[in-house]
Image 1 (tube, rainbow, N blue to C red):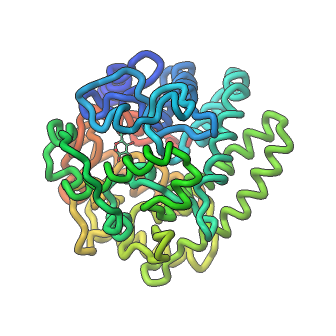
Image 2 (spheres, helix red, strand yellow):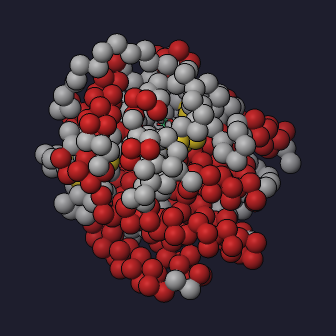
Length: 428
Ligand code: GLC
């Protein structure tokens, strides 16, 4: 175990609030959905029981309709905004724990498979208990978040996990700004405002929350009629991956009906994902559900196609060429947005910086598809970034400096599970 391995473990332990982990103290004081999935991946390196526990506490917040919310407000923290009272998604919607009203990408299903396969005997009972909730969650996505093309919609930029990406700019511009009264942002008190969304973006984020609250968090109606609906490669690809992994788990559990249903949905999902292909960009891209217009730049989400095991040979070759363009344009991969695009911003949230968790997913897909040199480039860059700057929330792809919050759970987790040189194979 290296010093950095020990430091990463210490970050996970310090952010552990007793069965669940916060992304980082201060800036993000609650349990976040896909952050917990990555945290479990990190815990699995030294405490597999604690890893399962992280997924189990996350599942405790599942709504009666199956949705796993993106934030669980387990303990009120006045230093965070917008908190539980702004979301208004508590007992009125049957939420077992006060929560946000949107979801996040279902990485947890894929991590459940990794944990199970690490030790099937020890994991079987845990998996058996968790599986119905994972299945209900993916059923919810298919029921309440499928767009016309079959690709999966996000109804708020926060649902995608890529909060401030230029991918949402077109659709966000049409979101009417409501009279929000006076409110005080807390994020800009923790980190430099130049790294965070602008005031105009924030007003629109909150206007979407107000709309959802007034719709009683009827998640079906919000996707069908709400002011923001964008078919998102992150959600579409991560769900497709989750479905593939859940199918394997269904078979292991002898759940034959579920396995057959998941298998059929994977085939349909792969066809639907093709609707996100933009010939102009030579990549998959977010597509506004209401206007049909594609995002006008390439984001790192496009590169999750391999993680979803999409293997259309024509698109694959072109996507690989586009990936190389991004790798050539940024000294440190993978930039969250194309460095050659005018909207690229090396330090602002999801408009250019590198995230270790995205690198892990993209690289894992590349590795499985046999694109080993690209996969290793991502692993090598992730290692350099963390060695150089520490466990920051994200990194500048030009100079490698850390940005956002320090001592970040998911960056420490990815170090332990994949980027550390002591993790020899690193592909689980
Ligand atoms: C930001 C990120 C999101 C993450 C959350 C907690 O909102 O954009 O992906 O889940 O922080 O780390």
